[in-house]
Length: 381
Image (cartoon, rainbow, N blue to C red; front, side, top):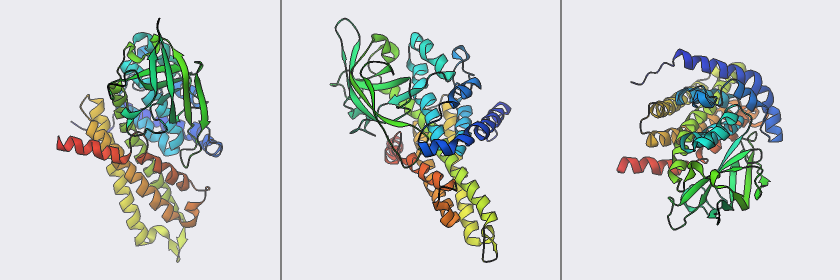
């Protein structure tokens, strides 16, 4: 049965992450945003606390908790900086997790302990310049060599951690005659010949998260690089996106909640017409609506996390959480800027950053339109 109370252990995780976010992350946000560079020095610090291995087994250096605990981590990090949280999530949810879920034992032993310790950073490369939400339409190819190994050719775009990763989860067709199911996944080390970062992207939001275009040109990898040691991994890609979408639901709700808290605080301090903004009914109604939407988004996101943590089917709920929380983040951050007036439009106040960061929520890892398609498909089956 779903409980609305977090366990003592989960609250301890929250306290630990909140303390880390305030004392270790917050002081780095301004510089990271200005220079558009993820502060990699955070990773070993997170690793030392076990926060990069929340859902990973102890045998690989993790702490063996569930998706709810991981979402608490995501929430507290994203409330301080969505960009930094995005890079961490891309490493844990999208890069290390598929190795845990689908990798061979050799692959797990090679990558997981160091990933969980924050010694190496992963990236997840599916999206291509001409292929976004339609993942099955990617162009990248991997051809098997005589005598063993594979040669990968293709371009990838919008890859979080692409500029700084030590390894990359790369999707490519090994059998183009089989749409979707002919896609395989490879773990490609950064120092592999033919792996090139061609451009770092400048973005509207999430500026503290490094994002890149990648080129794989006659990139030769051994048979051991094939995830799980077998061809055909489209299901693994989709399974990875489900856990990522649950995290995104929480992350977007956290951005909205941070904006709400900033708006409440500002409304109490700013005076107009002889009284604080918070005493004006128009502002009170805005805050009430914003708070209700945030609470609904968090509830939906944590329900999806609970379903995932208890091993239940949650494809629809993960998409609902991602879709709805993205809409809430867009609405609440916009209203927070409005409440701040002119001050909401300048970099000095964080609501400007929350507003820019919120837009990505409806685009990345499956647009809001794709989430609606998934939800409708489930409803009408």
